[in-house]
Amino acid sequence: MGAPIFHGIGASTGEAEGAVRIVRSHADSSRFQDGDVLVTKITDPTMVAMMGRAAAIICDIGSITSHPSIVSREMGIPCVVNTQVATTTLRDGQRVRVNGSTGEVYLI
Amino acid sequence: MISDQLVDEYLDAVAPAWCAMDFLTFAETIDVFLYDPLIALEWTELHTLPMLDTVAVKRLDSRTVAQLLHDSPSVIRCLMHYDILMAKCARLGTAAYLRIFDFYQDVLQALCKEDVFAKRFRNIIHAAEQVRGMVGRLRPSSPTVARALGRLANACYNLSYGLYSDMNPQLVYDNLGPYVRPDGRLFVLKIFHNLKPVELWPETASLPVGAIDVGVLLEGVTLKVDAATHAIYEGDQVNGLRGWWCEADGKALPLEAIDDVRQRLEATAVAVYEQVKQFNFEKKKEFYCFQKAWGYKKLYDVLDLDWRPPPAVLAAARGKSLFTNWNIPEDKKQAVTLLCQVFDPRREVPAEAFKGETD
Image: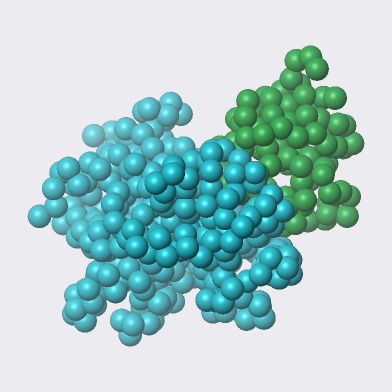
């Protein structure tokens, strides 16, 4: 697999793979497919349905007590927060592997 | 007489919980440290202290107050943190801070069976026989069920953020437990209440449910609930689910109905928060005061007090910029030490908590 492309705080355990979808608002819903990896600065309630369909969530900011962390643990999907660089490093459609235990994100 | 030990237990719980948050996540929304100081004096003098006075006059016991504050330790703890913080920002003196502390700690003592401030991350309000009763109702589970319940929790949590602001998701969501069973498995009661605050959001009147309770039995999972409401599960809630039940407004909600309810809640979360995102700064401040005040509505109704923020509270924030004068250290240990002093009802906020001030 190689080295992770970046890492953050692992906020919800588990591993998942999927296509990156950079999300900025509810307007991105039409582009979001089931099993995509939701990548955003920080989630807000307008992203709720996308969060429910995501394979994993990656955020630029946040902690283990932030909203994406809490709901990811409820849904049992990996979540990595406080990466600082996710939305500027990743591009739509790239396939990534997210390790919510270690906080590492890999390009695949 | 409030013991130092009790106050220290409170501070040991609240300061680390607040320091665990990333305040950058509040940049687009509401941050209690930036907003609440704007209304600190008016809120304390016109809302908090009259509430305490009227509870005393009407002789409401602490258990009744707890019920009227939603029977949720997380709600009550947050109201306690916010009201103490505001009284201290208003510099009303230690007698006032201790009075507010005593009021809320009494309410928590009446509700919680142990760990009233969640210093040990426990959120326990049920007696053993009540837990046995809830465990006895569990149905067989599967990962499919777990995923449906997880998405329901996601919908409720995000709805709460939209309805009540980023500072009050606990008005909907609390995790009661962990209730450790003899075999080591965990029972947790997840509550999602106050889904229809029609006084704030008239459109919620059309939601199919107002309150949801979910009982879960989990294996290989641990739960901590911190003093700032956050549920921190470790382990796999999907494959670790061993039993469940779900009720909406007191009636069983079958698995086949959960997705419909979840979709309605999601749509409402989007709709209300899209409105919040359009608020200008003055509207955001004013509406936040109403969202804050709504948490006390049930108690205020019984006290025959108007739950809405007094005009003077709204006027106190009008036209003002955010309070950006805090000087909280980046180093977490130093931040915890300072926040202990900020929340300590036995003393004033230290000068070093603010930029440019010295003792």
